[in-house]
Image (tube, rainbow, N blue to C red; front, side, top):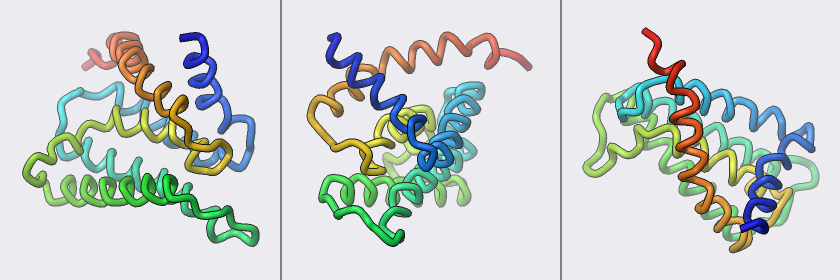
Length: 160
């Protein structure tokens, strides 16, 4: 478990070690905290937030390909980016239209979206490679982080 904890910490701190990544990751952290202070029910407003978070992250991941020295295109990065764009557009359109697609209500759950964006960020921006250990760390710590945020921010969320 110590290995996964170390990998997880690396995923979280890597964007803050590179100034070029800070501008992309800070809005996602802000979105996570903002969304944690609102209702945990999926609704159209949270779908818009999910769509924005996904599209913001995808834009940050696509940007390096338009620089003078673009990174090599890796299939795993391309697949994740395309999935994130698809989910982001679907969530955003669902929120604006106030109508979820069949079985698409999960798109209104912004908390999961932001956690995923934060933990995948260093790999998607090519500072770290996708590995099974990193993917396992993201999965292993998803529930504990969600519980900590859910219960830790409950006093703020309960204010009227």
